[in-house]
Amino acid sequence: MHYCQIAPPDLLARLAEEGTPAQRVAVLRTLATSAAIRARRALISELVRAPGFDVGALIAPVLREGENRSVYDVQHRGTRALPGHLVRREGDPPVADPSVNEAYDGTDRTYRFYDKVLDRQSVDGKGLPLISSVHFGVEFDNAFWNGSEMIYGDGSGHVFAVGALTKAIDVIGHELTHGVTQFTAGLEYHDEPGALNESISDVFGSLVKQYALRQTAAEADWLIGAGILAPGLGAALRSLKAPGTAFEGDSQPAHMRDYRRLPDDDDPRHDNGGVHINSGIPNHAFYLAATALGGHAWEKAGRIWYDALAKRLQPTSGFQDAAKAMLASAGVLFGAGGTEEEAVRAAWQGVGVLT
Amino acid sequence: MLVTIVRAGGLAAFVRQTELDSAELSADAAATLRALVAALEQAALPPSPRPDELLYELTVDGELIVRATEQSLSESARLLIGFVDGCPERVDSVEPL
Image 1 (cartoon, each protein chain N blue to C red):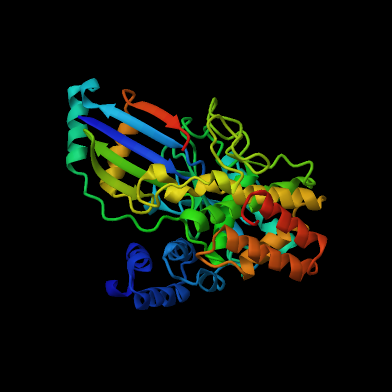
Image 2 (image 1 turned 90 degrees about the horizontal axis):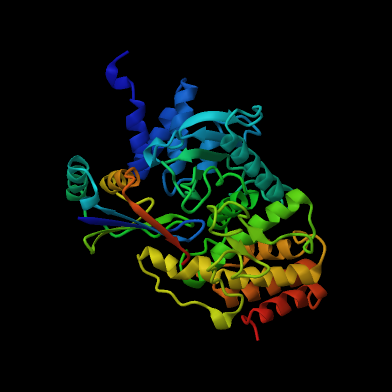
């Protein structure tokens, strides 16, 4: 075989990441005819990370049916090493590393919630395989959906407790819901649309946990990330029940009169216009609606919020748009003028978004 | 030379500030720090941030050198941050937004 007929995997990966659309299609064709399945898997992972790709369509032919979850170990390296070494695939038994098993289980809980409750298959609604990479970076204090896969750091002990970032299923649900929002309303990540984006993730993150525990709205703790902050920082990241009380110094508002105006600029201290601060307002609206309706929060309030997210919200939607969208969704799902619609109206009035 | 790293945003949205003063370092470590700072590229404008990405700011002696998101942070900035994090002389503080 001539050397020039062998496409070095690194070059293919670079083209998949950085190439023109035509180059990426050529890479895909090369992969489709490649006999080296292991290499193909690694390269598909690169493709998944390339922006603007129909990742579901790309992956479908190469993965076994029902192969939804895989967990990789990045071994403390960075973005260029993603996704890392495959350590657990769909159907594999637990491994020795608890981070791997926690990421696997939390992904499973989230997938099941969306599938069983909202009839949505994976974050894109088309069964997108869910890739998780654990042990990202060194003492990395974050977990996030990078647009195509889940990334988990180990925590530094300064912000997150060491090893805690895979432990909270509501956090895993929160992050994967950023993927759902990306494939549905596409809410922009700044100011009110960004705070709404954050709130949607907190709402469904909390519902993933409540569904896993089969808790009613009255039984749930309505916290996000309970027990994962570094010792001394506080009990949880956020509270939907009582915004502003999750930790010492928590300044989340629960009402529009306390909306915090921060600049939308590149200063890290401004949080893209306070997206993690002002999310307290729509968070609390959901809590009010869910507790007013009673029972399991995912059965009524959750379906209303999801219908609005999937069908009515737009990238630039703010809180008022969200309130109107959810009123419309409540009317369509449960009947116009019904108790559900009234509970939604009262909830958004309760946080000062509707008058 | 005083290097200050601010890391904020992310899932928790806490603001972590890390400072390292070359005066506290051995001569070798101080020289490494200066070399890493000299190699820093001025950052291009960060792309629009992804949800829950970490956001970074690097200042040297009070002068703003880099603001970036997780995806736009340059390799030279990552090397400097990794070096600072590895120095026991650094001083960390964490505050809510």
